Length: 217
Image (cartoon, rainbow, N blue to C red; front, side):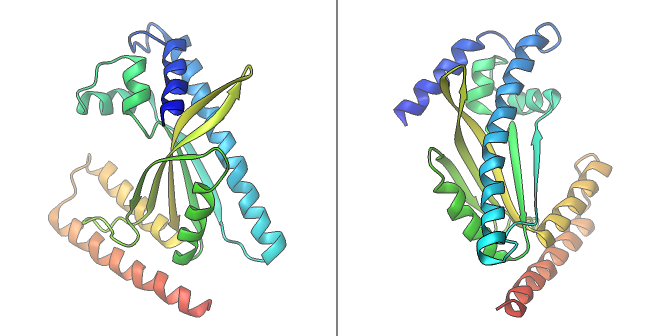
């Protein structure tokens, strides 16, 4: 990990200073570009996995891939919630989900196959894993989370950029989308009755996912 820390320090040195997006939008744009390059690097590798399974095994292991970069206001809000200094250095080291990749697959068993393939990609380093598939959150949320350091090359310099990866089934993604809309509509505060309903539907979706595995074996 020492080597990767050194690479992150190089990035810090490139973009030192206080996080002031309004007055220093150019620096922020440079940093977001670097995160976008990391997303492209990882997505290209995952797309190859998708095509490999289709061509060699006649199996669509991945349905689709979504990407996003966190909005400036979301980054600042998260930093404030974590009591971080508003500096680029703190942003790089403390906020691990600025760059996000979501991999959507047909079956629950595919999640673990995809996870194993991603973590074994050359150059990729695992920072953290969270298995919300085997043990869903109390809310009913289910997905496999990875925090990865992804190597990118800019002007012949290698940097390791942090990317969050979420792997989930199409059914899990449908549930998560509904929950997100419910939270957005109610400004993040869902009623107890709505929460219970969401948990109930999450359990139903989990049974459906398990049923689809039986059908496809």
